[in-house]
Image 1: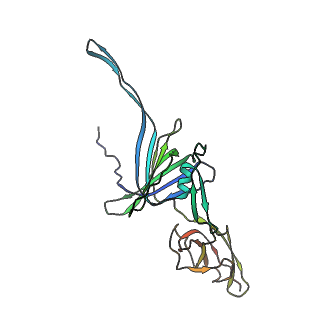
Image 2: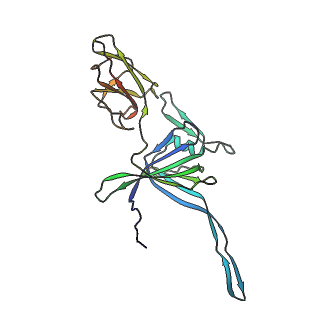
Image 3: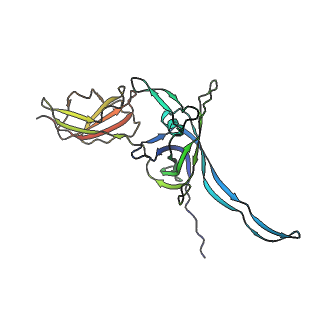
Length: 278
């Protein structure tokens, strides 16, 4: 008989939490402001059966413990309208610019209980040299949120706790652990096309879909080759584009178009090869 060691994986931090409903084509909501995830396993216990005769234990059937799911308490340091709506339903209100303007929970007695979703919790994995080698992802199926209350305190930013119940279906594990090399935070995809412009050296660019919000802006970059930015990457140093004017660019180079928020942080992006007028 040999002695073997198991795989040693050192994890740290709540790097990212995502939730995604089971609806076809549903967006995955990413939360990078969470700092704590507590998980309590939910079980049902069938009591032990003991045969005791005249004070002497003759036999016993041990208790049977059945795992029924997990209770997850997620601590988040900001209010996230889409998360709250996912957990308990209700209505989000936006202003004319498409910015968050308010939230109304379901009315008392409503059948609106939020959505059923999957929760993914990502932690960082480091080696002995302090190098980030990947991420541990723990996935909890069939989650549903409990009703949410919000408190306040002088001089303290609110840190909200969201309670989530996860109950696996028949034949489904209560959680899965996977090791992944990248986080699932990518910019949305823009379709970018380039045709020869009106004047020599100019190209006419079209982008679909349109800006998500009127307050968002376009930024562009032209180089022999370009790389799509990460979601939330600062692209404020790129050149601002109004979305319609022709752009002076070198034929055969690549052009990157980025939809950014008002602070210049990347939301969506796409690239193509420049076709410039000769």
